[in-house]
Image (cartoon, rainbow, N blue to C red; front, side, top):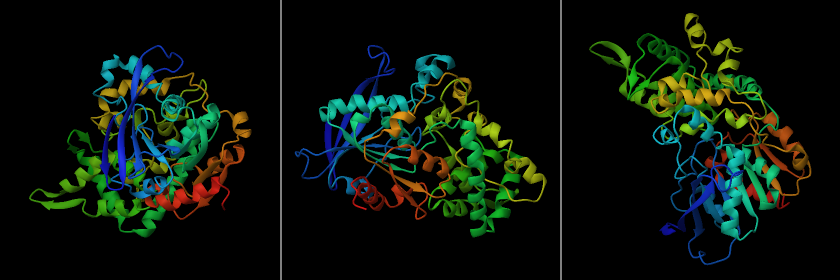
Length: 431
């Protein structure tokens, strides 16, 4: 272990060996990384543990600088483990560079089938036994981290002292098709709200999409297409996302000796905002996190989009309506336009066809839950369907919700100390 200091906090790098397949504990092992954080001056104290699971899938735990944001609030009473979930960050990363070590696409897909919430929870339980001596810990789960928390409550509630969820209560039984059938109307509402705030962006977005359709430029190996441009709508699910999108669009074009062209500034911003180089698992297993039972996910977002022709860029450009951005959806073309994903196209196809996914949630066990649970539910969350979240909240015995319109999906990042304070008060029956 290596320990070091940042302002107000002592950090320790911790690495754990866990089975790739927890049903075969003597088989292949992988490494999972966690960054321990404790308030400066309290490193020698016995403190309860809080483990943090980031949103995603496919993102490592947030890299804080010192005791900033919600971490500072947590360190007042906890020793915190910022866990890089398997395949992310420093935890045996899975990407186009490392996955060929597994073999071909079939072997890669079989490997990635072990990177869902069920395996992440088993990792947590293995790590908890080594860190706490068997004492239960508190779990803070953001977005997909909340999905993992509900799996934890379904499979190993004895490991949990309390659970805090922000924007991450999943449907217990929805197929991926259902998830996206509910998502597209929410995305459309967010786009309409953006255009109401910035009406000048209607023509800008159409002009950009038309240019991309005609010229198909490339930026650092990325093929810039109208569909890729539409995927910038993922920004609209955060509190400041509409403003970020507006600023990105406002300098899209520049006058050159050859006429009007897309600016290098815009092309780089589009490439950067849509690249999966830093989080390829997000694209690879995004629909797999919804897989339960025999039905394949089968590119659900792409198939369901056909039910919403207003999102078709070509049809929009042939008419005079506003271009609709898309949101948290993964499509087969992502694996054609992004050089970080291109070598993994066949692997993604095999995951999309995969059947026999283990069931993730146990309604009977959740209905008998005895672990204190509190969840922040954002009333118009673009990423997680609020109706599903509230049904799941009602299905988990004793769960207390804080339904708020003060924040978007990134409430924990935007105002972490206040959000964490509210959830802790709820699990402690202080409000």
